Image (cartoon, rainbow, N blue to C red; front, side, top):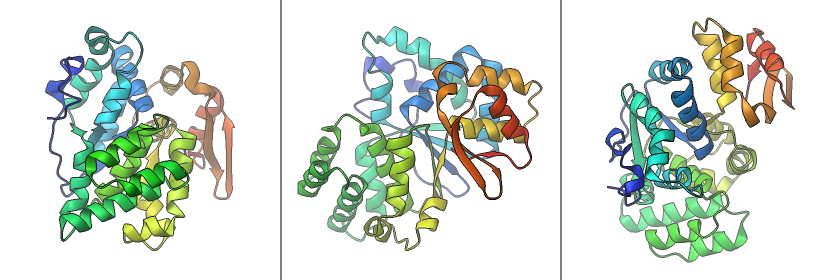
Length: 296
């Protein structure tokens, strides 16, 4: 059992979360960050009829959802959070989702175990795991050095957690890489985050040392197996592939609040791409256009 999940904070959701994930044929592996957990939980809580569309999406893809323990910690990190408040915010998501797909909590130790399963020796596995972690944060010189000097899994996790900003994203990137080493065909991270996720993934794709550790020579191969999907991309896929009776109301509900102010990456033709803040009518016009597509 994860020490994090053992906390009374998570009593209400613990029955819906599984442990000891193992890759199986035919799965589509999804991870999600704190923001997407918050947004999907809000949909499950406040718009359960619309949340059914997300359930259908994941079922159609034979999804399994992995959540690192750091994401649970971030989700409960708001000042004044209590177990009762956490139950109100998150139990509907976990309860409803678990009726249709499996959800797993993943510890940092398990990230290493995924790499270990693909290695000849524990020493070889640790060296590869440390290399992956170091290269993911290579632009953060001090943190990269701390990781390189780590001689245990615990010391490496402590180093990564020593810089709170983007900590969850760093562990998600590492989990993606560990799963790919263990034989996952693809891994999809659900996130709206630009600097900590979208642009970091591009940097990772261009990192030859990291790609060699993953046995990938081509950056295009890396991007094809490490996939990103934002909430806006989910909405695009749902409207295009499901019978949404009232797409205007659906989009208005799901893109309410601050989310509608994010800059969206999209295409409106084979060679026409852009990145802009889109109001909901503009967003809907793009996804209803046969040539339109949200790319992040």
